[in-house]
Amino acid sequence: MQIRQLLVDAHRCAGPLDDADTLAGAVDDAARSVGATIVERARARYVPHGVTVVAILAESHVVLSTWPEHRLALVDILLCNGVMDPREAWEVLAAVLQPSEIVATEAARGLVPSTPKPAVG
Image (cartoon, helix red, strand yellow):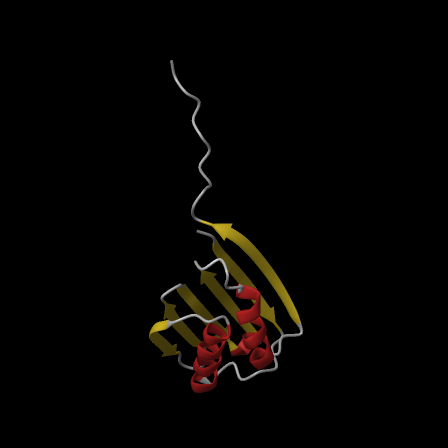
């Protein structure tokens, strides 16, 4: 089993960082773009501004949080299906967020391949 996580800091976004409906739709589209199954959704709208959207997937999650006053969005895409590429999901979100700069970190997570133990005796 391969677990892949992509963390993206999206800076100087030109997209609708305070539009909860648009962002929720983008998160759903991102999950669907890799063939993920959405199990549950949640979102929070902050006062005076900012949004967090979560899609809980059968394959893990997509989380998007925004700070419109800083034109910043933080994205966490975690997928436990090795066929699914979190970068593909990110591309869907990037089209909506429209960042001019990103800092992305991708990591293999979780299970460590087991190595055979030497025989004792």
